[in-house]
Image (cartoon, rainbow, N blue to C red; front, side, top):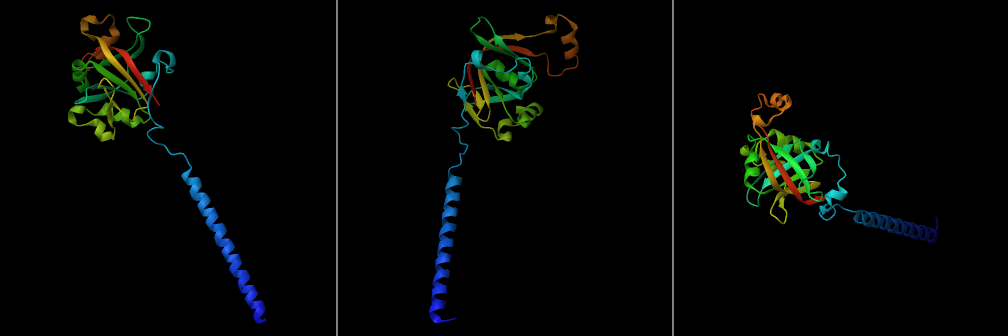
Length: 214
């Protein structure tokens, strides 16, 4: 091949290599920009927002208490939480006063908090492991929230809840009923409590003073 033809071929090869390199750079930059533009989940996206529980609560009151609910009571210094599977939601002492009824047995560590502190929260979680762990373990033996990696936060009233919850209802206790066997009107509670070591449940009726959801 003549020298001039060889030089022309070399120049053409260099041009092609430069063009390919430029195309590769553009593709790489475009992919990088596309990745950066992908939406990322942050605390703002996941923030709890207040809602009107009387107008916007969409859960079935008969089944809601089976949906991985946690009851927490205390203040900014001490608190404890437990799993609950019973309860009621509706109104009490007024059509415009939303309320929740919960049941806590005296043998539960959380019962001491419910007796001492004026407010409590009910929380719902997506992860059933939280519900199961809270039900299997006692706060007397250790910090259950820390063991689960949950982070305690507080309402404006100082009522504790966990940041990871997807629904939080804050209640102020209005009335307490310490049941005894003399209160039973048929055989259902008599049979149920036969051999139940934690004691007869105390009934707490709480006025709903705040509700938040994701």
